[in-house]
Each structure stands twice: as C-alpha cells, then as structure tokens.
Amino acid sequence: MVIGFILLAVSWFIAVKEAVDLELVPTIVTVVIGWVVILLFQFITSWIVAALIG
Image (cartoon, rainbow, N blue to C red; front, side):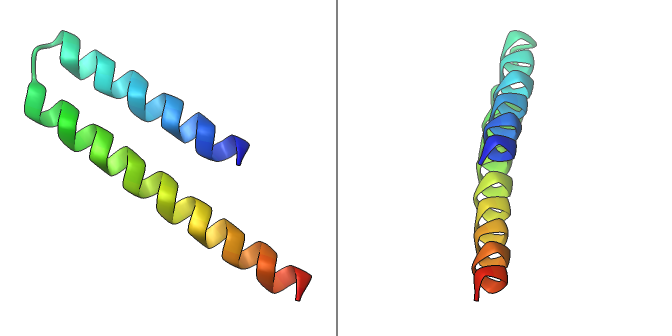
C-alpha cells in the first residue's frame, strides 16, 4: 500500500512538472498511466498476498 502511494506521488510530481511546461496532453497521459500502473500493482500485490495466505 505504501509503495502505491509512493507511485502516486511520483506520477503526480511528473504531472505537475509537465503542467508547468504547459504540455496538457502529456500531463493527462502521465496521470492516466500513473493510475493504471498503481491499480495494476495493487491488484498484483493483493493477488500475491492472497496466494501466500492461502
């Protein structure tokens, strides 16, 4: 869960950096990709934990 928040913070940092450069489309793409990566990571992590628990 902590790693997910770290990834979220990184993706938002990149998004803000892109927004400052006034590149709106890359900003939106960065945020969307960041969310997808976080969701996939959390899904995979929860699946692994569930498999380990049994």
